[in-house]
Structures are given as C-alpha cells and as structure tokens.
Figure 1 (cartoon, one colour):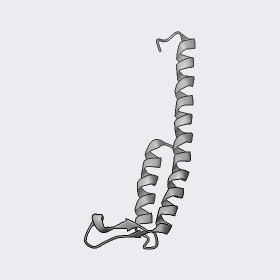
Figure 2 (spheres, rainbow, N blue to C red; figure 1 turned 60 degrees about the vertical axis):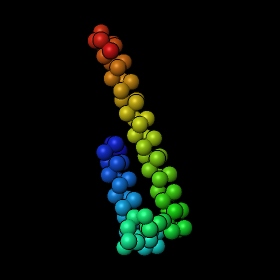
Figure 3 (cartoon, helix red, strand yellow; figure 1 turned 180 degrees about the vertical axis):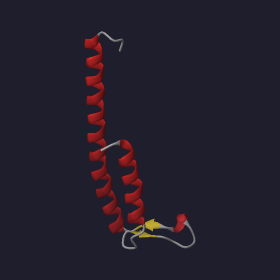
Length: 80
C-alpha cells in the first residue's frame, strides 16, 4: 500500500467513524462540544493500531526498495 492511500484511508476511516452516532457525538454547537463515546474511543484505538501496521509495512517496503536501488546504482558504478 502506498503512503497516499494510507493517508486517504486514515482520513476517510476517521471521518466515517465520526459519522456513527454510537462512536461520536457531534454537537450542533461545534467541535468543542463534540466527543468520542467510550465505544468510539475503543474502536478508534483499534483502527489506529490497524493503520499503524499498514504504515509500518509500507515504510519497510519503501526502505527495502530504496536500498536495492542504491545497491544497483553502486554495482553499475553510478554515484550514490
């Protein structure tokens, strides 16, 4: 998964959780009076845990790809 996809999933996922009344109380007065319910807080924690695994895997793959590119450039005699 790419970084942009993960960013979109994070924003979209949190936004969808906020639209669920069981998870988030959205006050008509404003954001200062809105809050996550107890159930919503637990769901949010699980969502973030899941997304951080995806982020970790993406970073690992990106680092591996970059390392391989540098090795190939080095083997070709290109400046790294």
